[in-house]
Length: 382
Image 1 (cartoon, rainbow, N blue to C red):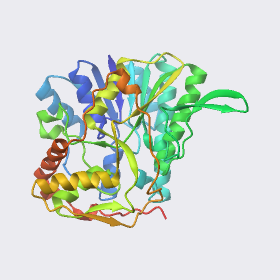
Image 2 (image 1 turned 90 degrees about the vertical axis):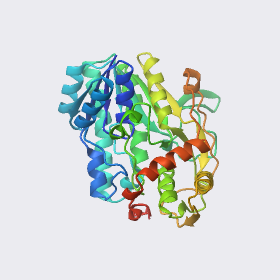
Image 3 (image 1 turned 135 degrees about the horizontal axis):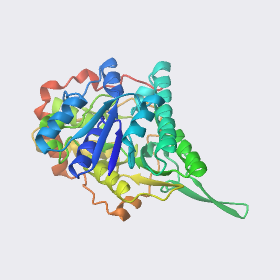
Image 4 (image 1 turned 45 degrees about the vertical axis):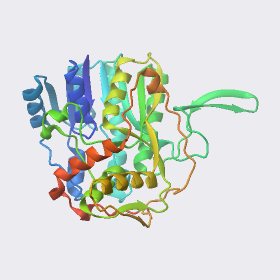
């Protein structure tokens, strides 16, 4: 298939491009280095310095014999994106091209505006470019489990049947996001649903939980093909932060009571999920929503697991609770349904002790790159 990947320089975009190319698809990636630039602006650079996209593609081609076309351009500029979609004519478009950080979006007005304009603008442009030039193209959009928030009822897979005064209808599951970033993802879903209903587009929206992992089958070929690994308070996840803190000898910082629970998945499973979604395209006029995670953990459970494995490896790992910089429930009910991708054939990689040990060993390789000043909270909601 011809596959266009937007946000192809990202933590998920680049591994997806390699995975698709390795499977024999014709792949084109597009990116404007927004995340790299924001990381530099906020002193939040990744642990491992990465080559630019052109160099990554060159290294991958030399190692694998597979090519990846690279376009440097802004998806929030409609004319630029339209030209790429028209000329490449993708059969599937994988949309990662958004500012991915909740803390960044809460940093101040400029960051909030940048998040809003980029995320909604990119999604709006994707919709129109596909509608105008490749209406049969399957849009695979990366959403987030953070759209749902932490409701006191089970989280269904995108939709909810509502009975009211004797009548019934299926609606998008109510969303109540906790950051502006997550709110833009809610608006993405609403935009997609409107255009699916109105113009018969075909869309899969993947509600993904936090992803962990430093390598994939393709990146194992060459260290310069590794995904971006951020461990700071702005672009890093709790898992990444804890791994680096364990190696650096810094107490694992649990925000508040540590009961915040989310659904997590291995980066190798993200690649599986995207492939499964692409290989089973939805009908025209349908929005399919899949909750994309394999296990649920609280922050306390993550800290316990990583500290236990780290101490068994000879690291002196401790855990410390600190004041929560965010506005969020620290103890809550959380039960999310996630059967759709399993039904499609997902074979999960779970967060075993061996997986944690492997990630710690990879971080230890780059121990000298760790800057502990990036780890503690620099952004507060209040």
